[in-house]
Length: 105
Length: 485
Image (cartoon, rainbow over all chains, first blue to last red; front, side):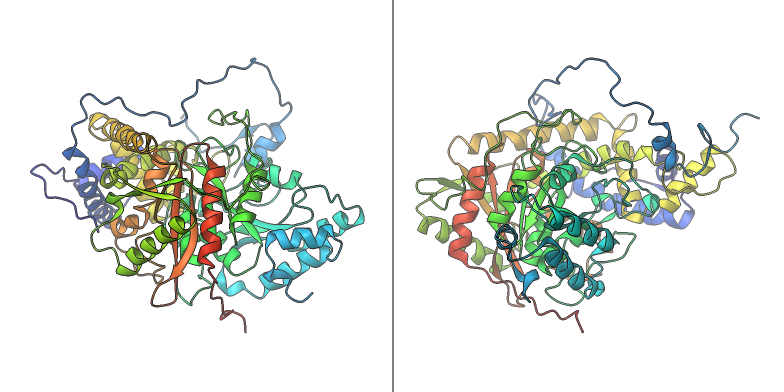
């Protein structure tokens, strides 16, 4: 199986970084979970660092495999009166609105 | 007819068209077998009584001109089905009932098929063993406590165990081909853009494709013909002329050039996989095809590229699960606290891990080093295939580096789990079609698959090669019904 080479440079993800990412991801993590995640992410990033072996300065990034230009369409309303359908799966609603915890004091 | 569930799709269609079987008889047979097979945990949601009602209605005035007249089908629980719960294998969608239908499933109903239920899968299709599903592991019908592969594990288990004659899965990095290989069935990942992604719960949008899974190549071709369509609701859907894949199916592949990439001979590949590959090469030669050695030099970089691109896209796609508009919501002291608790309690460990990786590689200061780098390497990987296809018509490789493993064997080591997809991931990164066909057994009697990779939009050629090889291989799946008492 593929074994990653050992690099001079390897980013280590510490608990502080995990806390930062968890905040950006809007996923709460406690200490125990943060430690587990740090371990997992470090082994995954060690694996990912393999890409640094390649020189890519003159390579154009691939953004889409489907080499087509996006089609244009008329800007018109096609579906109507979807309110009930849209609100139907909401965990909490009040007639026309999604209800969330109070945001403004 | 006692052995209805043993029949292939093509046989069932013929029997329904010849009026030897009614849709109701067929549906009831598959429902009955599914009821007896709960131990496999292949279904998340059963829709059996509705299926029987629909079959009765079909039989009252059967339209036998349709491609799937009154045929039962259970589908992966990643496809939105109108008024039928769709969970994506996640707790966060455990109460989600779509008010719309995915294009791919709509295409299936338009041809007369009837929904049996929704099949288990890894949570948001993130996994290679079906063990990340909130709804529990799925058993591989080949042997007890063996994973069925993933993420389309409920789908592969259900087809191999004959709980449904055919199914559809989705494939982002191997999620159709790897489970097909682990259960001894055929699975096709079509060219990116041939099947609409509308109404499929999104994982990594530049890689996701729906595709058929079946007992044999012909059935796979038929289902592909039904689901492949241009759809204006998916901006990456491609408007090209689709073939009549079944009508044009032929085992004549004389003169076709088949490439053998040397980089797929990975270290520590079990000898039986190496032998299987050699056997595959002999079979295509016997069919009159020509073998050409090729090189795909960036193969070893495909997995690391994938584990940047896929989590990055996933972290964006899964931002929509916020406990506000649909799905599970946890209580929180304020809005942010509600978001954080909802996502922490609603997503499983693997999904959280991937969201974190994706968020990190897209975060300020790291974007160029990771995401942009991966997109550049992705280009190199695609270039490898473009070069190879100047010399060959298709490429033959093993589907997976091993046969199915035991439940729990790899759950503690994410990287070793990811290595399962080493032969399948490059195909998604390049947007190409790939098919896995069962090709033999290992010493334990577990099935092994071979993968054929085609040129973009050349599914016909791919299916023809698979069809010719299938005839030579003459594979018999060893299903003992061990789970039925």
